[in-house]
Image (cartoon, one colour):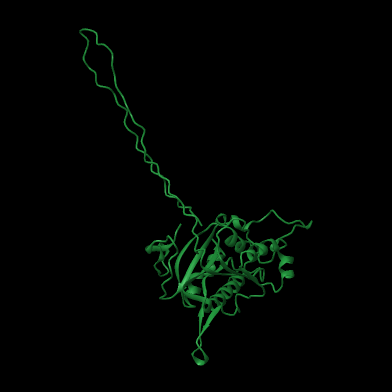
Length: 292
């Protein structure tokens, strides 16, 4: 990934003024030239909408419930991530393609760069991704994933009752956090992205994480445009019209969303390249640490 270059404007145009001409005899001798007031040069405004990318190309990344795999493909193709494991709930390629017909194109991009796709991985039951160390009773399992990302978790249309939907999704998140932590490498982070507003704010994701031994390091606005080729995939699959046509209609990538970075309590997360010490320091659940 290339470094952004900061372009600044600080040159001012030279301003010259003067008056001349012969003075008629007996005329007043006022020769002071009227100089225009120099205008203040406007400083470039800080780009508050610059996207936050919560991982580095060299990170070992686990994507949970990656839907049509377009997010994983973007990480590999456009963010040059070298070690991505993308998982889906569907048990077979055929089942995945039935829900997301364009998934094979994304799989080809992922596997072409030596990353991988795993099928039949349930976020609430997944086995840990670990490095086994030692022998016998001294064997110790250490998590290997630097970043574990779950974008837009949702149980699907289990119920039309809001309270039940909230409870089902809270249960999903709690079990995900419990099963993700053993896979997390020392200093790693878990990143969850949700839409803003209700009913998602009713899930109280910060409290759910806290009760499972995690704390919020920070949160930031999720910008889908930072991931070329990415399209929000619904849990139920591609929505088709009565005529059987796909496309158009509701687009999740156009909705306001927010990502939350969680780290183990009392754990020091490794800073991302270019991040300041202030941002890399683990904070408690403090709204002031959020980026707008």
